[in-house]
Length: 350
Ligand code: NAD
Ligand code: TDX
Image (cartoon, rainbow, N blue to C red):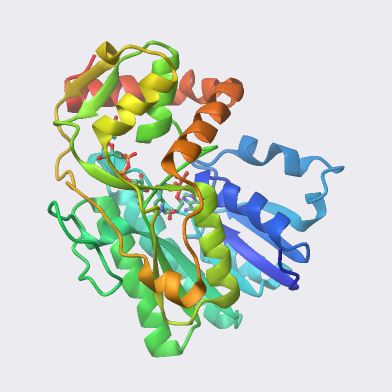
C-alpha cells in the first residue's frame, strides 16, 4: 500500500493488462486517480471495468473513462488540458502477433504513431513520468540457452514486435533529446483474467470447455516465459513509484514452458482428453524461445514474481469458468468469424 497523490493517464486501460492494472493500482494507492483513454478496438472491452462504472463502487470516483484514439493529436491534447495528468502509462497497442502478420498497417499507426502523439503531449504538458509498456518480443528469439538482458540488441521478427521496437526507440530518443522522464518495461507473456480469447491460454481454455480442438502451431515446442498479470501490475507500480528515468526493466515470471506443456496442463485441469490437440501449420517467423534475465528489477526495486505457474493457472482457469458470459459474448460474436477464417486460411485447420 502506498499513499501518494497521483493522477495517471492510462492509455489502453480497457484491454487485458490495462484493466488489471487499473484495479490493482486503485487498490494499492488510495490517493491515485486514473484517466483511461481507450479506442475500444476489438480487444478493448468496457465489460472489463463494469464494476467501476457503478456509482457505489469504492473506486468509482477515481476512474474516468474516455473513448479515444492515442494516434489522434487533438483528442490527446484535449485530455491533457482537461485532466492535467502527472504521469502516463502507455498500454495501448495492437497486441496480437498473428493479426500483425495478416496486416501490419494498424500496428504501425497505433504502436508507433500513437506512442509519438502521447510522447509529444507529455512533453508539452511536462509530465513527471512516462512509462512505455513494451515486450520481450523486441529482442527476437533465443536458442535453447541464455536469457535476454536489457542491453540485448533489438531484433524483432514479426511486424508486431517490430512496431513495438520502433516505439521503444522513439521513447528512448525523447529521453536523450528532450530529457522526457521515460521508462520502458519489457515483460514476458502475461496470462490471467480478462485476456482476450485469441491468445494461447484463454483460447485453449475456452476451446477445451467447448470440446473444440486446440490448434497448436508447429511442433508445440516453442518456449515462452509466463507471467501472471498481477505480478506484472506490481512490477509496473514499483517502476511508477521508484523506477529510474531513462531505464529499461525486464519483467519475467521465471517460468519457461513449451506450448505443449501449457496445453497439457490446461487439458488436465479441465479433465479433457489430449485428443483435442491438433498440430497445425506453423506461424510464419515463429520465435522459438523467449527468456528474460530479471536481475535488474530484482536488484534495483526488489521485485520478484510472486505467483507460481501452478497458482496462476489455477486462478486463471477458475476465472474463465466463473465468467463464462464474459468470454461467450466475445466467442459468439465477430471474433468467431475471424477465428474460423483465420485458422482455416493460415493454418489449414477446420
Ligand atoms: P490488449 O490487446 O488486450 O489491449 C490493448 C488495449 O489497447 C485495448 O483496450 C485496445 O482497445 C486499446 N487500443 C488499441 N489501439 C488503441 C488506440 N489507437 N488508442 C487507444 N487505445 C487503443 O493488449 P494487452 O495484452 O493488454 O497488452 C497491453 C500492452 O502490453 C501492449 O502494449 C502489449 O504490447 C504489451 N505486452 C503484452 C503482453 C501480453 O502477454 N499480453 C506481454 C508483453 C507486453
Ligand atoms: O492458436 C494458437 N496456437 C499456438 O500454438 C496461438 C494463438 C498461439 N500459439 C503459440 C504461438 C506462441 O508460441 O502459443 C504461443 C503464444 O502465442 P500468443 O498467445 O499469440 O502470444 P505471443 O505470440 O507469444 O505474444 C504474446 O506475448 C508477448 C502477446 O500476444 C504479445 O502482445 C506480447 O508482447
